[in-house]
Amino acid sequence: MADASHGTPGTTIEFGSPNELVDEFENPGIPPHRPRLADRDPRAEKRAERQVALLFTISVIGTVLFFVGYFFIPLNDTIERLRLQNLTLGLGTAFAMLGIGVGIVHWAKTLMPDHEVTEDRHDIRPESDRQDAEQMVNDILEESGIKRRPLIRNTLLGAVLLAPLPAIAIFRDLGPLPGNVLKETLWDTGVRLTRDPSGTPIRASDVTIGSAFHVIPEGLNEVEDMLEEKAKAVVLLMRLDPNDLNPSPGREDWGYDGIVAYSKICTHVGCPVALYEQHTHHLLCPCHQSTFDVEQEAKVIFGPAARPLPQLPIEVDDEGYLVASSDFQEPVGPSFWERG
Image (cartoon, rainbow, N blue to C red; front, side):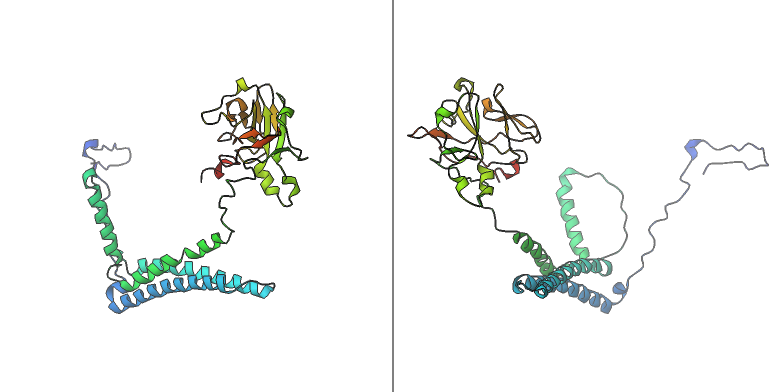
């Protein structure tokens, strides 16, 4: 404590050297531990254990109730059946979540050790990290009492294993899995390229340098309810000087005499790539300004698109009409569809 002289008003007070200063307040330490009822009375401890197990069991029952409502109360045209199923699903989910949540809190409050401890900070030695972590896990298991309380352990396992199942069932009910729907279109070997929307087949001689055609598979307009398939299959057809194209190895035969075809669906968010600039050979998506260079296999040169437009391999049949050599070799549309 700094030394000071106390005097009458006006008297100068002199403090000691800063090197002589010490802590003004002493460490009060940890407050004394107050035992809980379960710490003092074995019967109270056993009662708390049964209460925790009961809460976990309620969680299990809630999960079962959810599945009963989900699978065994089929919906019909009556509002009463719909209300009954909603009530069962809601109560089941509530009991499943509430039981496991309150059970864990009650377990921690009544049975797990509540002693406050302090320890000095020490340097962590890298070679002993694994041993320290293992010891911490063992201490947690020992303090939780899960090893010596099989009733709590077994009911907790049941609640934890069953609780996620309602969420899985709900997500599964969103609809059938897409399978290969996002990776396949109506294009196939020998399918003719036709004008959109007239459906007129296109000869190679019809496509002049600098021209561009909006193309769909032959017969698409004759089928009802095919808007989804059309959205995936629409193509832009262009003709360049063959010397301006730079096909990568393996794609040399994907075009015909400078005629190339690329998906019209932007790889950003699926907007239509509707603009073609014949002098620069650039394709532009007007929605977010993604720009693709046809001379470089529709490589992205500007904008938010993440990958080039997929190319449709084409050839000419015996009658001189342009046909597809195969389907697209990669998924069309936004990039989050790609390579799942």
